[in-house]
Amino acid sequence: MRRLLSVVVSVYNEEEALAQFYQVTEGILNTISWDYELVFVNDGSRDQSLPILNHLADSNPKVKVVSFSRNFGHEAAMIAGIDYSQGDGIICMDADLQHPPACIPEIIRRFEDGYEVINMVRTKNESAGWFKNMASSAFYKLINALSDVKFESNASDFFAISRNVAAVLKENYREKVRFLRGYVQNVGFPKTTIEYEARARVAGESKYSIRKLFQFSVNTIVCFSNLPLKLGIFAGIFAGFLGLVVLVYTLFTRSGAPSGYATIVILNCFMFAFLFLIVGIIGEYISILFTELKDRPIYIVQNTRNLGENIKNS
Ligand code: UDP
Ligand code: MG
Image 1: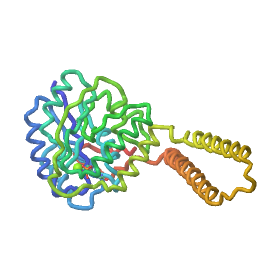
Image 2: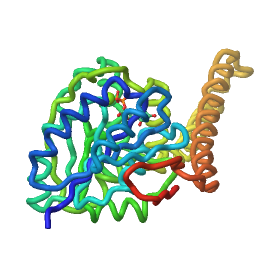
Image 3: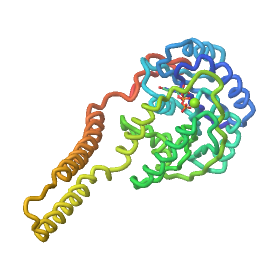
Image 4: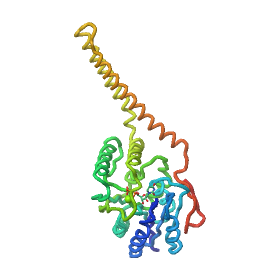
């Protein structure tokens, strides 16, 4: 029997890119030796994306559509796509053709060689500005320094996983605050990387704002490292040591009433800054604990196409 490849595509307001994406991708999928299904996840688009997807699904039964009740974010969309995929291999990619579908035959070859996690690593990102590129590389340095698990820098939301890995993601790793790429790189299994050049998007604009990316980075650090929580201990030791030094200094110089007004104010400011920073860090962890505790769904599906009646929320 032919093996099945699932291509998961997250879609948020991509009406301008979809037709071209489908045309290019379907063209390539028809040339491979595996059977395929194209699982589009409509992440609460407010434009014409959903009607376009439904139309594609009506003309091609291999096109499946999962449509969310509202926008849940790119990661939630990828998770839903993986949940609904039936394939022996699953590829996650963007709808804007930044992830070249031309890589699909190579991915298939790697699957056939027995690899179960295929990381697509971008060699160059034409669309992101210097700021995004710099921030991204700083972020990977920081997270690798803070966390026990290792992250591939330049890894993207473009990756492929086997059915086994997908099963692990479906069963475990159901955290509400998460970094899917981090899980994929750290589940183990035979792993390989393929390099690709990220193109500029074919149409429309990036849906990720700097603010979203920043929040995303904070969440990732909190999810993958407990080290920031221990900052308080180091700060405490440091402040204690400083106090001791000042004490000894004062005792030995015996300079009478010291005129250290500026010193006191400055030290006070620094100490409070430290304190509030640490309280803030603890707050980040508590907020994630709270989110996990509430156990609300990662996504809610409003309806599906070509997937039978099987609606599952998670
Ligand atoms: N996306 C999504 N939900 C969102 C934001 C984005 O499903 O809330 C999709 C989007 O349609 C695209 C992919 O995620 O297919 C990546 O988004 P984008 O291209 O805007 O990000 P960038 O490539 O600029 O990092
Ligand atoms: Mg993009």
